Length: 420
Image: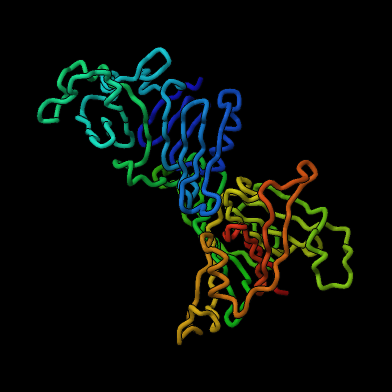
């Protein structure tokens, strides 16, 4: 059984397991994996058809805890404890809920302070006790009394003993003072050390060119020296540009060392090449710089050691690579096609920004003059898993960009290759 300290407006912790508001979804999953001896069952739920319409939820079913993530930024927004009988909870080292300790309103007021009167939800028959960053919910029927619980004015309990009979049914931890307006806070500083996170990655074109030639990366970066000298200003915002034909040294000087370097042993897209020679012409291997927290892969040519491809990952649930990368928040501007039914008289000067949240149907409506060519069907598999439970994706080409599209019309990844 989990035993956790409750920290309002921050999260749950016991020294080994930390669930902190604002932590990225991928980091949270890794934390739960590392706690496999105590966290036995975790279920991931999301909206498969409309993944941006509903939060992503990690449900610790054996422990009665739900971790609710913002569906756009994929950061922890709300921690909800919906079954207090399966978990031990403490506040300032005082246990207020455990198998042998009934979490009554009286006990919780002793632990958290008697400075809140509480509110009644008449329609749902609930009593709500709200502090900044934490909400306690008590069903009125848990009092087990046939007589009225409140006085004639409905402002106070009819008997002092009522506080000892109302039992906690749900607890929510969030950022701010109103759980209905809760938003995911920024990434906690402890999850930034040694990594950089992108605020946005923008595609850049040379003047008069349709091809994207570089990426402008707006990153949040932390430094241990900065943390020690100025803890209150520990996150810096930087802007870096990486371009085709950059060397590995150029990229590392801009983004830092990659999280991983992966050497390709084959090229499954070679069959689609226009070259008559479909066989590899060199024994050298192309290699990737993987920046998982940026949601970015950079491919280098194994012979020239220059950038030849960028891959931006959107990390939508239901995709083969889900949870390998953090979500990349990208933006690439395209001129609106004069043939588009959305074009106006000055369409030549109009552009549309294709982002992480743009659906493929919108791209087709605004950008393409004609219906896109038949896509390449991509079915991912590996030697250890010969089936892909998430199904096919479809790859469409436009200038020097390949869009990998899921069945729900959301963009799974954007591949930008060198136009030369």
